[in-house]
Image (cartoon, rainbow, N blue to C red; front, side):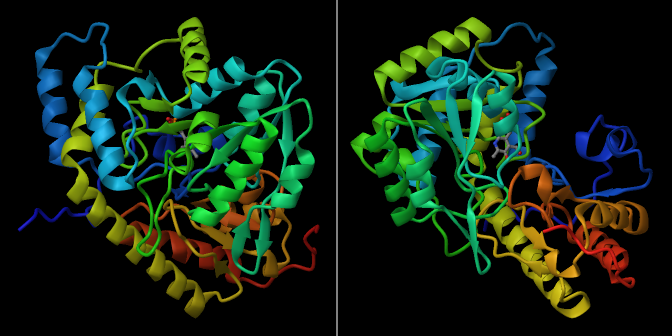
Length: 400
Ligand SMILES: Cc1ncc(COP(=O)(O)O)c(C=O)c1O
């Protein structure tokens, strides 16, 4: 009989320097917000992770650290077990995090002024890292077909020109919650391989997949896809270890790997801190049962949210969630501007979601909800959303 983890337990996070819970006034100027934003969970890591960390803490010396070989082996075994992808040890490079490694990839594979494709609405640091490193953002927006976001493959062919070197791909996709199908991945890989575009595939959400869906690493599709792809993975999103950092880049191509490795060494090297490898290795070795129970809890929270809005506020449509714990709420039929939505949520509801517009084109009129919290917190948050949006809608039409 396996251990049952208690995801209902509320743990006070205020006063722990938590970005999610302690930065409300600083970032929004509003007091008393219930935070259902940022991809950070309100669940404690299981004892399988905390015990080895406590032993590391007790040692008392926190000098420069190196990832042990066992860390990479644990990652390989996890990726094989959970995703059926046989990653060679020498394909792996260590990084302090997915976003730092993305910055290194931008520097390694492109030159100032080059075009880098993103498919908005998408995790906003992609665009920030591209422009911050003096590259051009080339948008190939996703298309909303009914309630399902899809890749515009014809658009993708069209935006690629001689100066388009890279696609930053999000798989599963934050914030639209898609787990891309084999067919979609094959088509995307075929276009990028044919056009000589390097795929940097951010798969940090790879373990967070709802029942009935399967994450497929794009690099696992074919030798050609593998040669063209840099895959970024981590234990930090799955196990809520983001404050510790640590990620792995899987790069099969010796040429790309050499360039990424050299750039990483030029700008940074290795893990974020002395606890990162201990925590992630323990997670990959011992965390399987915790993740399975976490996913069941998130799915139940998702169903709770869908039925809440069906009953209480049917004008808000909860989009399907195939992966991540971050469904989009479609509020467009309320016909409020994004500013008016924000004002109501923050000032009337005192609830903090992520605004869809933050994720770029196509995000207007949506809000992203974080389901990874105890049911009681979620329920409080949904009540606040309902309070914010149930009052009569003013006559200001939202801009299309
Ligand atoms: C798609 C995506 N990539 C990367 C990150 C952050 O990665 P890291 O903390 O390793 O830089 C997040 C966090 O929300 C994310 O959603």
